Structures are given as structure tokens and as C-alpha cells.
Amino acid sequence: MKQINMNLIIISGLSGSGKSIALHLLEDMDYYCVDNLPISMLPALIKELHKNNTQQKQNIAIGIDARNIPDRLNEFESCLDELKEHKINYKVFYLEANDETIIKRFSETRRKHPLSQGRRSLSEAIAKERKLLEPIADCADLRLDTSITNVHQLRERLKERLIKDDESSASILFESFGFKHGAPNNADFVFDVRCLSNPHWVPELRPQTGKDKAVIEFLESNTDVNAMYQDILQFLKKWIPEFIAENRSYMTIAIGCTGGQHRSVYLTEKIATELKKYYPNILVRHRELE
Image (cartoon, rainbow, N blue to C red; front, side):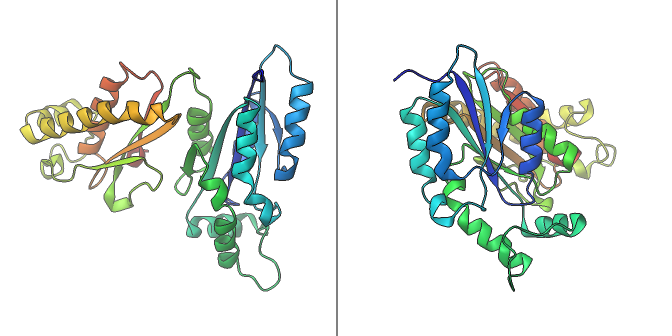
């Protein structure tokens, strides 16, 4: 069967996690967007795409959420199999946030949760939605936690991860963070470097970051830091190709220290710089510095 010349992005996730922002962003980037598409209509969309297939690549984005009939959500994986049979290039992105953040967002906007019917509380509606959307979350190529991002940051994160410069290579995000603010829950690998010599205890280095020359010199003078760098680098050189071989288009690698300011920032920068020689679509983010 001839492959359809198109990019299809399926956006799903919890209400209040940023799905509308994602669709609006893709619309701004000339994607044809369809929100709240019933899963049962995916086959009809496939037929329409076949009929109207042209030489010019089509960019389509579809929003699917918990307003679908619950039984249909369980059919999501079989719908993806049908897309594969028709040789449609697709990616599934799932957005989520913690309950506290979602409740706060609904309170600020005074919107009603789509599942908060009758005597069901907002917390109960969120829990029910998480359960209903599990079949989609389990199939996601990329899961994004938007708990600590504002609207502008979310647009940038989505733009970085959804729109790749080179579609033929994987998109890899290296993210530093501080354990005292919580570890990211959507990372494929999490490395804990809190055992390393800490610049925080050197008064003149405390206000600086792992990007600053004095901190870099301090860390590079410690053999434990170099040993950790070599171990993480060799581990990733071995296993990233294995992930990519399994058709993983997106990876997130998180490196954490106590505050996310010195050690994790330094190692994230150093490892990402080295691996950019092999993987062009590497992104670097320092969560606590933002």
C-alpha cells in the first residue's frame, strides 16, 4: 500500500493540561487541526486522506480526549494499528499535570471539568479522566508534564518537542533538575548526582551556576565528577541507539542534584554537548534556572 504523504499528530491528555494550547500552536504552524474527534471517525478520516492524497505533504493534528465514549477509548490501539496498515506517519502526544495544578487551573478559569457531572467532585472527575485515558497514555510517543509551566513556557516546550528540524532523527531532551523540587515523572532515564562534590558549600560559588567558569573549574578538578560524567556518557552511548532501534522518536534524560543549580547543570551541558556529535536533535533544559 502506498504511503500517504503527511504528518499526523494526535494530541490527548487531561483536561487543563494544555491540549488546547498545543492545538492552537500547531494551527499557527499551518497544521489542519480537528479537536475532540470521536475515535470511531478515525477510519473515515483515513479514507478521506486516501482520496485527497496529493504530492504536497499534509500536516494534520487531531485532538482526542475523554469526551469520547469510554468503550471507544479502549479501541485506540487498534485504530493506531489501522494507521500503520495505511502507512500513515503519526505521533501520539499525551499532556498531563498533577491534580493540584489542574484544580488550580480550573479554579482560575472558572471552567467546568467535562466529567464533573452530578455530584462528582473535581478531584473525582480528574481521577476518572486519568483512568479513561490510560489506553491513550500507554500508546504515547511522548508524555509531557505541564505542572510547573506557564502558557508561554508550555508553547516553547511544545514547539521544541513537536516540531523537529530533522524528522529522520530522534528528539532527545536533556534536563537538569533539583530533587528538593521533585523529580520529573516523564523521564526515560533519571541520574542522581547528589553524591558528587558540591559547589554550594563554597561561599563564592553558591550564587553561580553550572554554566559559570568558576563552578566548571571547581567540578572538573574533582575526580568523582569526571568519573560520573564518563559513566553516564558511556551508558547513554550504549543504550540510546537501542531505544532508537525500537522506533522511539522521543527521549527525555534527566540529571538531578539537590538544588538543580550546579552539578546537574554542569553535567547536563557537558553530556549533551558530547552527544550532539551523534544526535542533531538534542535539546537542553535547566528546570530550576528558569
